[in-house]
Image (cartoon, rainbow, N blue to C red; front, side, top):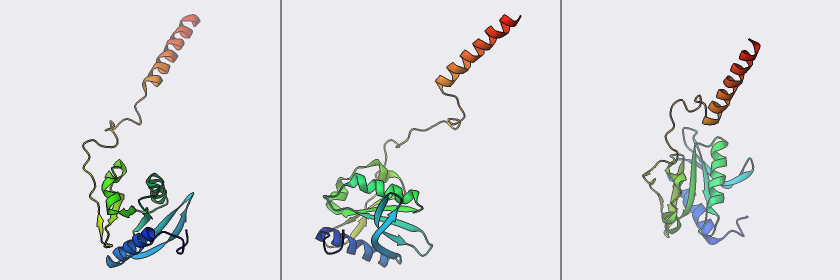
Length: 161
């Protein structure tokens, strides 16, 4: 969407996030950046070279799509993924994705001030704890197949005798 056709709310959010990152000493580019099969709305680059993907969503935008865009950005080498939206909308987002340290919500209030929304404390983790040997441990199906093969071997060796 070009600057002449984008909504007032989106322009407001873009200006606010650009001002925010510049005040922190980041280099900021607010423009469509193509990544694989998607685009993000901008990026911020810190003095240490760490790149942050920025996706701006107005209250009427598709937030699930925004999460997909940010996930693609992380897969393409960005170290941080930031969803920027209005404060009112940010308070209603309850996605477990934002429990992950790579994902952040920046909320913009009506005066253009930005605040990072705190990561919700998880009563339960997103992924269950896995035993250390989960990758090497055979599944129940594999154990059954192995038992059947051993049985067939025993039958075959008894026939040879």
